[in-house]
Image (cartoon, rainbow, N blue to C red):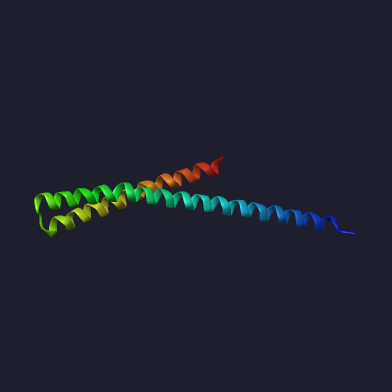
Length: 99
């Protein structure tokens, strides 16, 4: 005969493993969402800025200093935009975990 305490422990263990699996799947989905958002942000941000810098360089025949300044502007804008996206994603994760 199987002990009742043993069966309860087994069911508790199975439920806990199921809970852990669900949490892992949720974390994987959130990580995938974060990667997609970062990819989109980089595309939306860096391609237009790069095109603007190249057009200005070709149009005005400017020297390498202008390219470096444009690259610095692009870098700082990217860092700032990435922080905004990170805050929004963290806020979304907190909201999802509240409900």
